[in-house]
Structures are given as C-alpha cells and as structure tokens.
Amino acid sequence: MDLVAGVDRVSWRVCSGIKRHLRQFLGQSMTEQEPTPDESTPVKELPGALAFVGMGTTIAGSVGLGVGLGLWADSHWGSAPWGLVIGVVIGSVLAVAAVAGQVRRYL
Image (cartoon, rainbow, N blue to C red; front, side):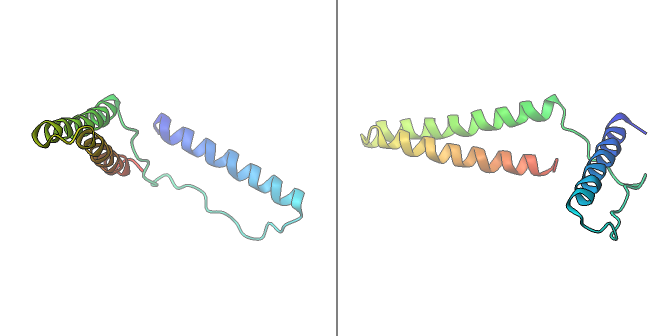
C-alpha cells in the first residue's frame, strides 16, 4: 500500500467516525452503513511539478497571445486601448478554459 492510499483510508475512517458521533449526538439512527473503501479502489495520482509548470505556461501563453493580438489590433486600426482590453479578456477566458481542462484530468 502506498502513502497516498494509506492517507486516503485514514481520512475516510476519521470522517466516518465524525459522522457517526454527529448522528448519535443528533439522535439519528445508525441503520444505514456506509461502504468501506476497498483495497482495489483506484487512487488517482497527484499531479507533479511538471503539471503545474504546464498550467502556468498555458496561462502565460494564453494571456500573452491575447495581449499581443490586442496590441496589434490597436496599432493596425488605431483603436487604443480597446484592442488591448478585448485581447486581455479573450486571453483570460482562453486561459481559464484551458486550465480547467487540464485540472479535470486530476479530479
């Protein structure tokens, strides 16, 4: 058993003990039993430092691309500062969407 699986099982036991004591304190019945974690229950791996570097690079690249396109639009069409503002907004939205997709892999 690895460390993550051991911590997961210990935290499950602590939480189930707290629930049991709360039910007794509130006078609720203990008829329904909660399932215990099985040894074959898959434990998802925690992301390493490389995953966080990838997320940071994604954020910086997306916002940087939006800023670059916004500055180009301002210089090309003379619409300062609206091109930059719209570029920052679009870059931020793209960054959030991309990072959300990356985070979903670990949930």
